[in-house]
Image 1 (cartoon, protein in one colour):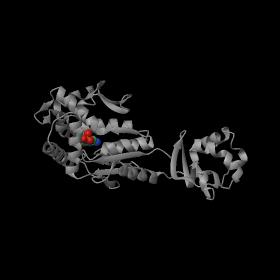
Image 2: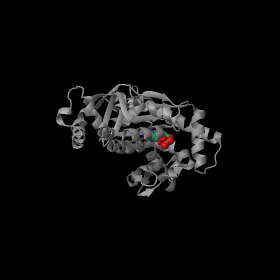
Image 3: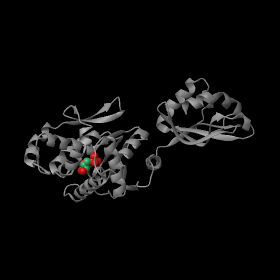
Image 4: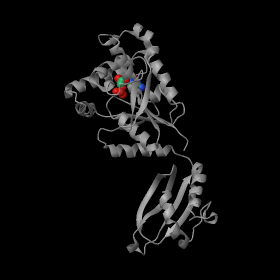
Length: 328
Ligand code: DC
């Protein structure tokens, strides 16, 4: 499948980043947390005394903007990306209450948005990314092929955020967290520049009552709907044993296989009377590689490959099971 751009927008603490991260992992895309970039600018302002009360000193910030460098680096230990501000890992600090409390006014500053949007567009220019934020589907990538808008009830969001903060050792009350969320919602949705709103072509997911597994199944299904690339059958066969049945898509050796009808992954000889069939399909773009793997195995000869479909004799297929399992 041609790589696409996936935009995930929504209110704070509604599980956007969990959703975006999980989706990126499932489809092997890069994940970019745009909120972390606004948080990093906020941390910079806090450290450099650029706040007058709740609001930034815009003139001073504008002057220093080109001194702010933000990037993401992979952390081997956690298996996740960390946010760096001027070469310093600030991942932990930007998630605290102090930054959370001051980030919305920073995100409302037009020239800060312009600065960060440009960086985000640069990061996504080769597609194959999942970016989450508030304006990804509307401003950063208005042409994103898949746009998801996430919502959840405020009390559910506050409860999730509270659990997150408590786990990090911050002591805050449910009311404080809820108040902070509502304040941020208000600023995020009413600010003049790129207010949070659903893109017209975004799919809305309210995940208040969804488990992570249900959410993942839903977003993966959405992603697959986008996958229009043609699949080609490389092998079809019938088999006389009842076996474990799997349908769907499987990844192996960098190839996506689509298993149509029944796939027999494991033999259960005691069900010796049952008959089933499987069609092994691969993406058009993976066809060459799949055929090579099948041939290299020595189990499959040129004449066995079938393009288009044609059943292969049962006795030949029996000997091919190991390679089919390898490919799948
Ligand atoms: O997703 P988050 O809670 O880490 O975002 C932090 C703040 O940054 C939040 O107040 C909204 C703002 N933000 C934004 O305005 N645009 C984005 N694309 C991402 C975040």
